[in-house]
Length: 464
Image 1 (cartoon, helix red, strand yellow):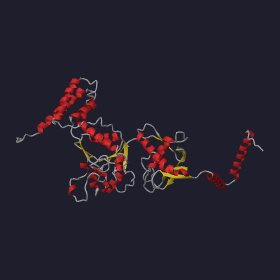
Image 2 (image 1 turned 45 degrees about the vertical axis):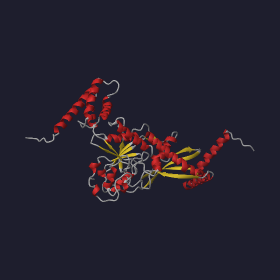
Image 3 (image 1 turned 120 degrees about the vertical axis):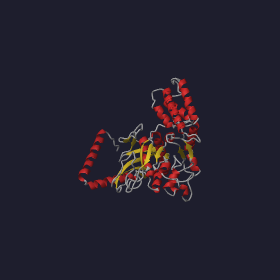
Image 4 (image 1 turned 90 degrees about the vertical axis):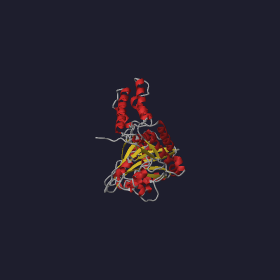
């Protein structure tokens, strides 16, 4: 007998299903309904191919320890790839980021397809006891900060057909990490980190660094450096950044050390900012006077992220290292020495003094930043006054004043830092290049005359 399903019979079927469902709900106790739903789910699962599940927690350990980078990478990847059509998303906009970042809310599901294999992502959250005083990661963009005796431990579940396990482990997850890294580099907000002052009983031990947005405008084009030195530093940095695979191939840590020394105001801080802007690195400003022990110093250095600059400023003022050579110790400070192998805080600090780009001295390229030279003056005059650009007013007067200033600087008759010259130019903003250079010449002559007056001729004695 052939059965024909028309609209009338379909309506009768739906009405029967509704009556049957209502009867089950009204006459079966809740326990029986739960068992029935579980049985139906078990039967339906028996006809589905077997699946594997990967759990990715937001933080390592039940107490909310170090942040799990794979969790953040997965959320960032899903936000860019899989949530465009999702009915509900969580949005977060980092400061200075051009657009918000989407992530998967708690108890929601989305899907992704990789090389023809469909996978399922589910966001989870469970309440855990974090213990007294432990905290979650303070900078996590996708979850709240845990604290006190409890909090939510967020996570992601990745489900996929069991026969594609090798594809997921060996290719899909590395692909996810690579894509997330690329997206971070494209739109990330670079940070300036400063180590926290700690003391006895400090329970907030996960927050070794506090951070702020890093937006220093210094670049190699604006640095008041000799052009040859500027090109040498820039070439060395780019060569280092491009040779990460080479360092790994020869079995060396990917790090480069720089010692910046010179009088205050000669551009050391601006050079560090220019390096960070050139390489697109974060900056860690390590204040040694707040480091209580050598083990704490090691923890600070280990907690820094790849592609970052670790800076120790005014090392000669932070610690008294004048008698280091008198101390008996095994080994010494040299290229390739690791801070973790130092005998005490002072040894570690001395090694840190040899570097700016890595947490240990790798090759201490020493860079001396001295008083202003004629090439540096030309850079400052171009940046602040537009000297050399088309449309400069009164070029003959400007060129004559520049020549006179350069002659004083070249003969080393006057010692003045680039920062001092910049202050002179800033005070003449809007008055024109000639006016600013006249004021600079007045300052240069004043310093020259003062230096000559304080100099005592050989054999000459002062009388009352």
